Image (cartoon, rainbow, N blue to C red):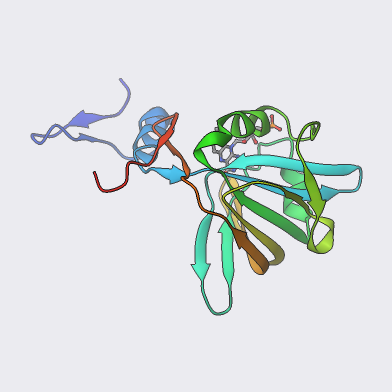
Length: 174
Ligand SMILES: Cc1cc2nc3c(=O)[nH]c(=O)nc-3n(C[C@H](O)[C@H](O)[C@H](O)COP(=O)(O)O)c2cc1C
């Protein structure tokens, strides 16, 4: 018994809880997102993490957010960072996304320059937001980190998309 039931409209319904954790994850995964790599400078070097929790928040002042998971081995670095950079990935950056899912410390072959507060800026992404940490909010098993965007950049291109556990492309106008 997994705590889910099916309505007449074929929608599986459930109350999120221990018995329905898989269904809750799957329902959240129906939401398509872009994919980012967030970077920060730790005491012992640069750290990166693939994240799809990025969201725009405010135009004036310019604010964005993302959510590091408390369970991640990289949590302490990102929760404590005074500055960080968000890199929006293009569809050609699947390997880069997979790399920073697995390993946060290996920047071999990843071209970076130093941004505000020392946060590593990865070259060649679709868009980039260099941030100063403006606020942190507890949010269950994640932390919400709000950044004030000090410097932004972009180039033409198509985004990498993530939904239902898979990377994909954005089909314009379909
Ligand atoms: C598409 C995608 C999006 C992710 N988004 C986040 C995220 O927003 N926040 C987060 O903490 N981890 C996210 N992760 C997981 C991290 O990239 C990383 O795998 C996880 O923190 C495990 O790191 P660890 O092995 O250092 O503990 C995401 C993974 C994938 C594949």
